[in-house]
Image (cartoon, rainbow, N blue to C red; front, side):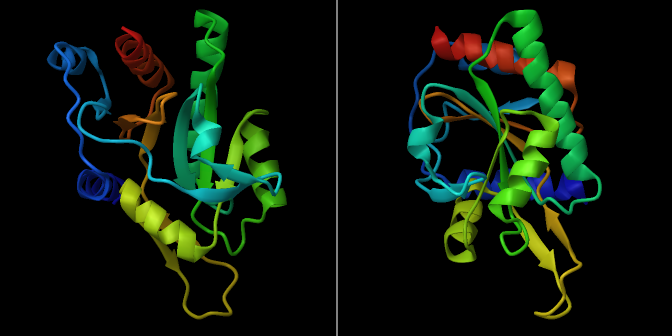
Length: 210
């Protein structure tokens, strides 16, 4: 199911985000070097404009993405397996980048697809349990839904009625890599592994700066 959702997410992303022409003599070369990432930077434009609330209760917009690389994952704090596993892996990636490669301008962005339950306090406790610099963000449905659609993220809340508080959310499991200029650089599909994400990120980062 997760692989199907990830594939649907890629398809939706290709439709939902504005296409631009990005000329690069090396685009074929970089794809042949990647182990698990789907390289998107030369096909797609920037992250759609958004105005979310971060886990401190402060506005969080596209401007907050500049001058750093960010690894985005979409989930919810009540997630029993996929979310904690993926965030643990992304924490391992950040630690490896810092400790082995001296790269410190990379952050984890955890986007909650369950704004009804995921208050700023809950997102902060959840995200920071994995990494102290991870940032949790979300928005009300009228803002969140179109953003998810434009990013190619599928999220379906499994509620039997409006009063149910104990429910799951089916959601895409892909990780997005966003460049400092807010360009969508790559998508990492499952299975996620620390070493392959780190290696692919280093390849993309080098290509981006050349």
